[in-house]
Length: 287
Length: 215
Image 1 (cartoon, each protein chain N blue to C red):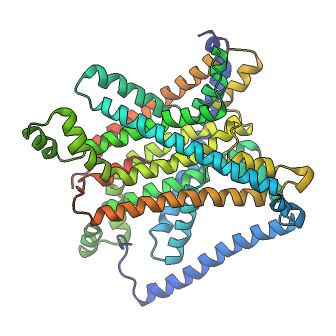
Image 2 (cartoon, rainbow over the protein chains, first blue to last red):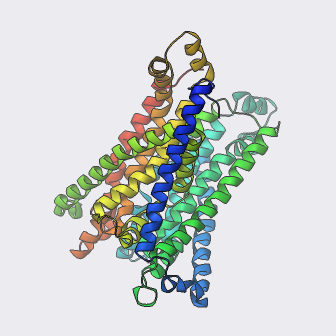
């Protein structure tokens, strides 16, 4: 943490900071205590509301739900990476008739909300006689949207390599494909790996949108168990805390992987450090 | 085409509602996000910790889960009753604020330390330094990624479809009730979003080119 805006604090400022720290902690504690008091007042953690944990059936269905989330993530990620690679290559093509349609497709799929895409595949296509399962609709939508974003990431990665790399390769007599596959891609992939992984975190989070089209993933499992008023008296709070913890845990593992790779890259002398890697990463905001 | 012309009123009302959701949660998330960014660059470690905690939790939670929490779980706590529309605004604002915070913070961090040090050496006060040196430079690098965040927010308003909040994502429900062609209806919704997003993307590219700081 570089102190961009502040001088190193002197004795007076340090004393002031201590007071502010106490106020800050008090404010956070006050909010936490209030929330916990509401939990207790509305009896969110009574034995009946937590009894769902004991049922083997429910434990198994939780594992299955996590499995469904992860399988949508895995299939979606592989397809999105392939889609991204193909369309990045098409957008970098020397032929305008390949470049232009690829650019239009990528721009359009980046502009359509994922929810609308999922609705289109799940509710829209049956009108035309094509019936897709919820899983297929989720995976295809994830592929189209995240694939388009990944295509832009790949393209930016290759474009940001120093020109000398491809010029030297051409000077050695390599053909276009060779330049791309042997020289540009390996370097671009290494440099873009952290960005690619953080896009995969987005993809993992987006699998939860499958909830809207009745795909039996983790969040839908949570609302089913949490909404069970008959057996457990609607244990929504405890179930949702668990579901959130699982999602955050999964995402943090991926984020940690991205940070680890970034650190390893920084040590590795083979990796070209891109001049404008920072603004690039900044502009590709993942939401 | 007839799906659109027959239901033009529905489409206009729904997209109007989408834009309203977008505008309200956009303003709220900008305010909250800037506040969080101030916490994250503050000299008090506890404040930094609070900001980091918030951003880590919200950034790694699916937006749909935030929606489920505010629409299904929050009412069980019996604190203050809120309408589904308000709950949607709260969920969108809290979620987007985490991203706004990151954009603002990284914008401030792109200003080299030397700039602030040089202004202090010249005897500028803290306010002068912020107002005339640091923020103008930070703003330039913030606007393009902030535009992407806002585009994402605009698209994210459709998540409210699963929670009985009327907006462009729920056009499908109304159409299928009336027995209209859902396939073409959804195509028109998609086109509507492309029309809304494209100018923003274009503006972002223009800002980026015109405002890029040569360092």
